Length: 173
Image (cartoon, rainbow, N blue to C red):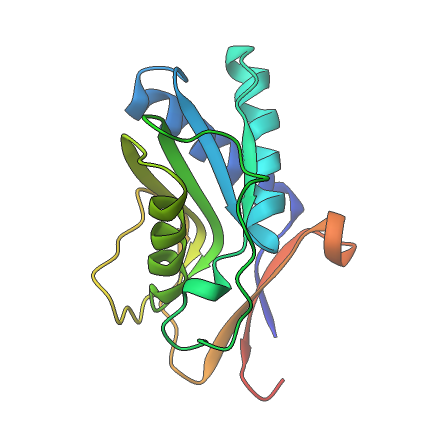
């Protein structure tokens, strides 16, 4: 396993992404963060804190499990999204830890469209490892890490894993 981001690098990356979100959207009006379970949730909450520190605006964070909408996992149970607040006519910033094939993001977008009709959907990825199977592109990327198909990206957050780090590892590790 090879560490590519440590705690300080993750903190700096989140700060940069938060500033990019503010700049691209000319502020935070009508912005909603939607974190994809599991680590996208923690990343979204950290972005929320960073956005508040910069702009003094409390951006809503919702959590989304898009597994029911995946085209490669039809056996998942549908979980109603009543818990998610209103996203109709909002600028939704979809947040995930690793962007890979694009299938999770596509499923998340399908789930969002079932829920409401966002004005715009933007995508944050802490790490983009490439290998898209669908034409999906991140709007805000922390780090591009070209990987082979035999490698994987491991993201760890203190809230879930006890440490902040990102590693590249061989699949067998």
